[in-house]
Length: 315
Image 1: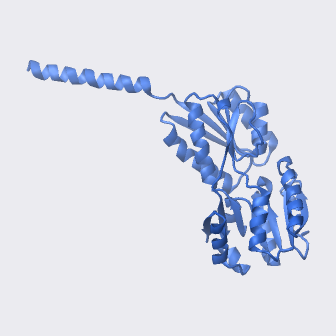
Image 2 (image 1 turned 135 degrees about the horizontal axis):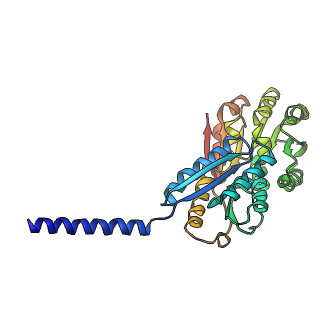
Image 3 (image 1 turned 90 degrees about the vertical axis):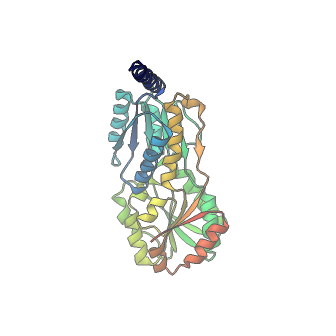
């Protein structure tokens, strides 16, 4: 009997020590505030990738709050201020404008930017860049469509796209492609602007421009009437009606960001983590849209692979 009691007591002590060790070495609970500038499938994919990966990368409990500004800068500012006041462990803005506002608003918590065109690291932040160079996109388009002579570039008044707009015109000229520029101030302008596409334009081109992408269906409908392509710069716009795009998988942006987030939550100084670039490019193809335009899908896939890109068909 004494042996049995001794064995039970020893087992109890061992179990207690194991629990105490686990508690002592467990990571503390953390809170993450994600701010989206507007409703869009690509942004949702980024968030989904982040959520899935953070639960693997950080072993402690994490509470994630996602707030959407619905295209309103005042709402976006209020969301960021709320995250700052609540003292969340990490603020995660998605996109360039949201990141710039976060840096100006959030002073004490670390900031992790996703899908930001950030030329350099700003104080108290790091992030994941996902931009594809205009030269890369236009070179591929020219190789695939060597007879292309005129495209229409539709863009917003966002400061972040202005350099790319001018590059599109300059590089297009070198490739023998005339670029018609059409800018919108707000999403409701997109319908009237889409009807201003020149009759001799052979394709519509869209940068990584959240405002334009959020209204891609309007451009896709107009392009279908004119029997021209809509060439974009992100996966989400292809799911919503674009013809093809050279870009990165949106979910992988969130996944890569989550690895950075785990480092920050575990105590790494955010200023010591350099901004990371997405390097693996994919050609996203809207098969039904391309078939309507008579595009050779096999040829498009072969050229994408020859350029070192992945190929993803949206059916």
